Amino acid sequence: MRKIIVAALLAAAAAAPAGLGATGKVEKTRGEVAAGYRGTPITVGWDQLLYVKKGDRVDVLVTFAAKTGKDSDKDSKETVTATILQNVVVVNVLKPAKREGGGVIELLLNPNEAQYAALSVAQGKMVHIVVRAPGDLEMHPMEMASFRRLIK
Image 1 (cartoon, one colour):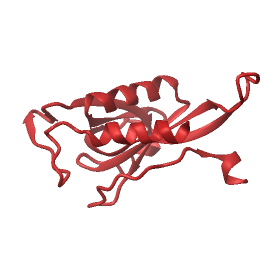
Image 2 (cartoon, rainbow, N blue to C red):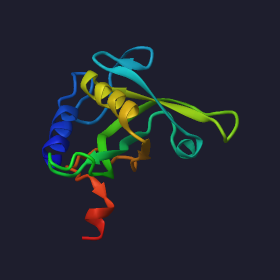
Image 3 (cartoon, rainbow, N blue to C red):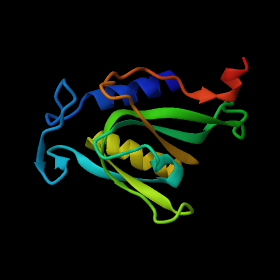
Image 4 (cartoon, rainbow, N blue to C red):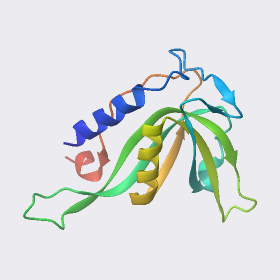
């Protein structure tokens, strides 16, 4: 089931509007947001903003409590991390004045991706932004990470 969800997320992300070409370049039509996309702010801790800058491509990971038991064991949950968005463009970075505060990363997302980002922020314990290497535009199917799988 988890693999199906992740595969569906990847398929939705791959079906980008016309503004994103095969080269990964975004055609801007007004301001910083390309036609067919949404500027989507994600609040993150100051430490996640250290190496992120405008124009970077990032992946978005969310950590949350996932139901792991069968229907008879409704309280069985474990903490997992899933890569929900891959290869998205950073439109803006708003860093806090002090380290104690959180900052904001604005991402360029298609409407489908924006919904998943909003859901992740609402349901997740933590949203992580990870920077991709320049030129790394590939999308990969990703399994959810959990300690149970790690120590199997």
